[in-house]
Length: 379
Image: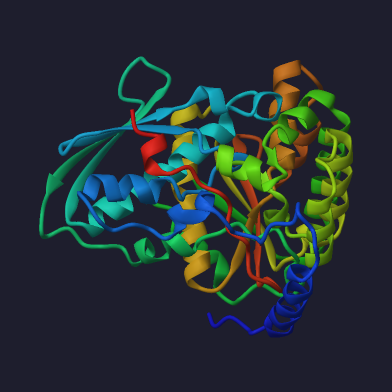
């Protein structure tokens, strides 16, 4: 699949705008992707393979860029733990997304170890500690083959901007399904115009419900990093530059104070109604309805591989988990299964939608998100 060169004009316009911006005396303005918070993306290949693997793991996708992981490392094994202080609360009451993010980190970890000729044996949920989500045993072995996806790890970014509203590339469903390496996970790809319209409408409705739910809205807003100082201090969360909004809105947003949760919710809802639901297809990763946290880890591994594959092929990707978040909220509060029923029509009553996303060709390059370095997540 060859990526059309849609973004040349936008790149030029951004360059011209950037020159104008830098000439203005705006003390609160800061360039995108500036500072130590973005240094981990320049993946350091120095040191032992186990440390390099952790550096790659911290570049994985995670819900709201919460990076909910900790690692214990020796030459013989790496243990992956959930950092439950980084849970999303009401936005992820069943910790489904937290475990998916941990699965994403696990996949990057294994890909990198294999690339450095380390044979890996992964055990999920290895003991009674719910925070201990995986153990990776490591054995040096020159016969281990490297997966080409490992080279894309520093280039994978969530693109929340507008995508081309066109047909899906031929063979997309099969290509994405090829990345599923666990029988636990299934892929549903929605490409027909009527299916995409229905999924978009339901995603907008779920976003409206989240914005109207004060606890969910506040839980989401807690991970928004507005100023350069916030970004450098926390090195996580969603930044104004990574929202997918245009250069002008991002520039003036930086000159303004931090928005309230209600105001940020309205911007998010507006973006969801417009450019954040464009694209060639919507996708759902599902498991059995009675699946546990271990299955969510498998979903995370599958999603990370799909996102790396998309980056390799010049495709953009963005999670759209609002319906699944409302599905979990309904279960938590004992509400009628509105969004659970909406998702069941796509995946079936005996399965549970775990990870939802859009895929397509983006009009603009994605901005990198801040990352905590490996040294911050080693126990």
